Length: 440
Image 1 (cartoon, rainbow, N blue to C red):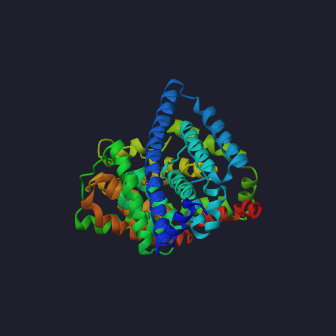
Image 2: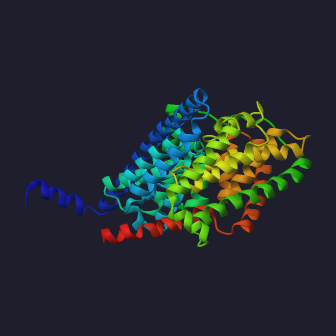
Image 3: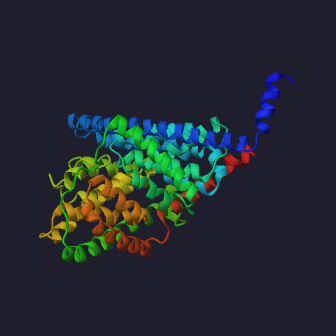
């Protein structure tokens, strides 16, 4: 035995040394993963904004080009996704949920770095086509993939807590909303929340948030909303916003789940012809965008920000049209999230509700519409309230937001009993079975 081997043996003989070493590795893997995903989230956000700018500029110079370009890119993206990376389709959050329930899936292609890279590139391609997609869901999937890769490098065993922490940090970095990241981990990603996971989540969120803050600066995603509602208005407006948003959001979720899993003949036919479905969805997005002056293309962020700040109102058709193109983009099977587009749809719904309450501040009613519809879709009321409070700096609206969220959650459950992301995650678990069998 050499002197180096004797020293190594003596070190490992020290009581508790191996546990301390594993703990140090785990912390290093989490810290480096959080820093990495913070950097990638910033780059992804910048590229996403540039992609939308390029599309808008190109469309302004060639007004009718989306009629050809948008369906063509939809078809190409869906064909590439189904041909080479089916795990990259859709939001990205269901993939993380599936792996959280079954850690064996974390070692398949579901959350691999190649899948994550394809996810980012194809989401950018959808934004270049005017697709109504967000970057939040893809950021969550990419964040989980980064965490898994870092833990592999440091030879640390994977846990559900690592996936939860990565997903939470992804939401926090995408929206610049650290509290919403923690809330999302509790409500959606973690079936059973333990204190150890809480500390891991908060650590990852803090690190990725500091990276984002240091490079992008402190900013409020949707701008500052100064308006509030009096008690009398809250008692009337919040229930209406909750009922309308919950119904529409529940119908949206039910539609997506039907296209993903329904055994009815039409839905089965569409699933068997994904390229044809993508073509139809692309045409819907292109035509609707032209009819609405381009307001429904992309995430809808710019229009929503102006509405929240009270600087400009959108067309009364913005909400219904944005709902249509978001549904068409989502059911196409192309990679891309629904967080930001859903908030834009909610803003349009809120503007329509504001016409019914002319004596109340329009931006405040719009904020309740955003809450009601978003909760109706994702069924995560705490996350929705915190996201909207953090992205609009509207602390004075927190009680109306909670009232709307609670009602919307109850109504959405009546319309669509199964939560959207949980329902979609089952498909990824079944799809990954062949990969697991091959590896075994």
